[in-house]
Image 1 (cartoon, rainbow, N blue to C red):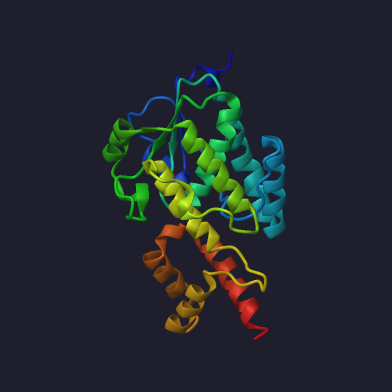
Image 2 (image 1 turned 180 degrees about the vertical axis):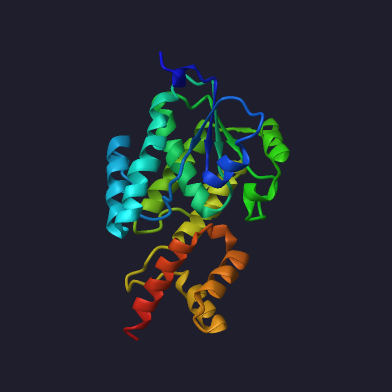
Length: 259
């Protein structure tokens, strides 16, 4: 039996920043960084190995540096998920924004396949509208979040699966009418679905979020740094990094070039 098989608690973290915040914490168990950005690129649901291969190909298509980093850093870390089936508790540290939610949806698709559905808990930020999320908290405040861990139900998992399929689909198939009395996680999922739909192209290739980008271009005279700062401040619920924002900006510029 490997050392990884002996962990009673497993903490799956939303990124390197949170891992750094928790490196000197008193939390027990294994920490795995889910360093993904599933808000964009392919999501292969046929198998975990095919998922990793498709993600690697996607990052390699962006540039060689991204591909090398994913292969040498992220894949070995993500492969640790193959060894969590003996854990007694799995804590998923993910925030309310769309970036985090899509990653969470995928994990709620993957982990139940390991017969872990009764062991999964969601660790969430204290303030659901502070888009700094975990980054706004001290180490002791982060440690205390485990006392308010939310046990994820089968209904939550089913809704997350549907949300993931909606995100992958080119068409919007879910709406806010999906659940009558949503749990706190279901409410987060439903909100994020509406933001996910904002990123979908219609028949002429336009996205609902495009008008936000166009307005920011006018306000900042096409200054990327200012545009991104305002976007993060006013539209933090998307949770986009500068790379995802640049991709949206490039899409708008391509669209407008034909006008």
